[in-house]
Length: 214
Image (cartoon, rainbow, N blue to C red; front, side, top):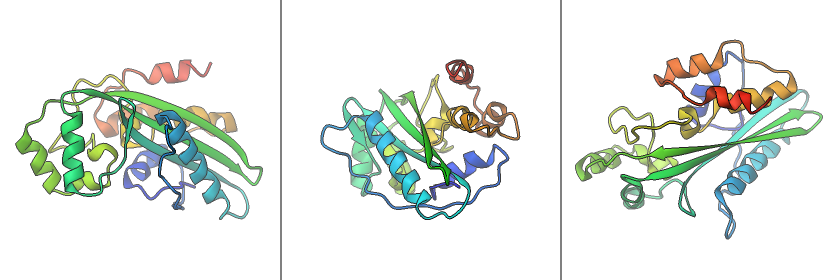
């Protein structure tokens, strides 16, 4: 059970070959005062997992995730309008920021909860004002944390990244595989290979994710 209606998370989760249903839930996503990026996404992922699990009767595995763009000490969520999207993209242009994604996996009916966290350094290219404004006019930034989609073919805002591409999209698949293996659940395919093929990205870090679980 995926506790999200994000098309990007559904796309990524489908790569594992599992059959799953979608049960999105609404939680208060406002950060607490002084809350760090890691604590913020872990809190929201757990809240989503628990809220979704409360609606389920019988056996199920609930997968919830939350993703946040962090620049310095500031958490950047989804822009409320085009003006805020422009402000965010100007702020991030030509710099490196971080994307935090937390996973919360709950096994029902036992209620056992497992969490994981992925952090990726994201180097933004020095895109022009014209490119940025054309991208904003498309409307794509308005439902994206930090006002951008790493996978957008027309804008391609990121260059030279050496981390987890799927994490920046919102669902770090190797971290998810690592977490689900604690429940005895494995993907039906070679998930790192499927992810790299789908995203057309040669991932330099997936071995480290699994090595750190040893």
